[in-house]
View (cartoon, rainbow, N blue to C red):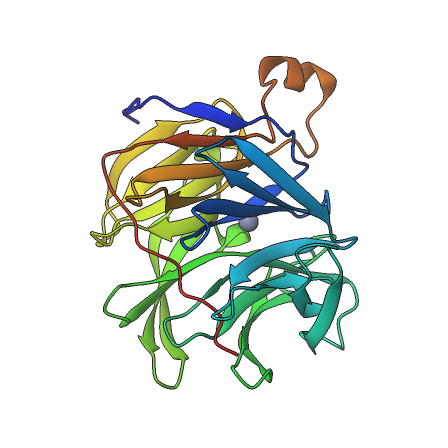
Length: 294
Ligand code: ZN
């Protein structure tokens, strides 16, 4: 594998247990992300370097901006309104009333303002999770079943395709997408990641349709072309790279979350900034996130 080395800087040395789900908030010009097992939502204002955080007292898999300026979270037992001052969450919809051993994981809004988020068994029982769609009227539909670790997802700019990662499959899959109904069909493999290169986790698309995939256990983020072919790799000084997103005033800064979960003291000596938030300018740009419209 050829390493395409770009300067990567540490921008928040927070030792997140599982840093995840970065989203650029355009109105505030801030990044928001979660620490799933640390139960925190974090914000960074890159202009001032100011960090803020709140404790939501629950596993929080993802957050998304809403059209009203608030945040919605995939946390605890489902989809939650999040009070950004107190950290209190209020259940909007329970995702899986029948599966108490599951938790919410990665999620993202689609172009019509629906919030998609997946689940996984906390003990990673194979096939116990699913992918759910929170509709604008707060009803929930199960969109995929038999998922083990529901993770990164994103849509092409023309809304014709959705990409999806179940980390346990070691693949990035592609599905046909119908945006007005929000339906998916014809799931098929697009990218196979070798086990020795890490597990695919979070994912974002750039403005040219390239896929940026975080590799958990792989010390890197990779770019794949829309046809699934490998393009480049950015090395990160932390092994458990969990997700990435474009942000900044021109959407050309790539923000990268990592995890310290499960690392021994000895491993942490070798990667002292594990669980930190990193940033680089990889020469590609992204696009603004969609917001929940309910
Ligand atoms: Zn993830």
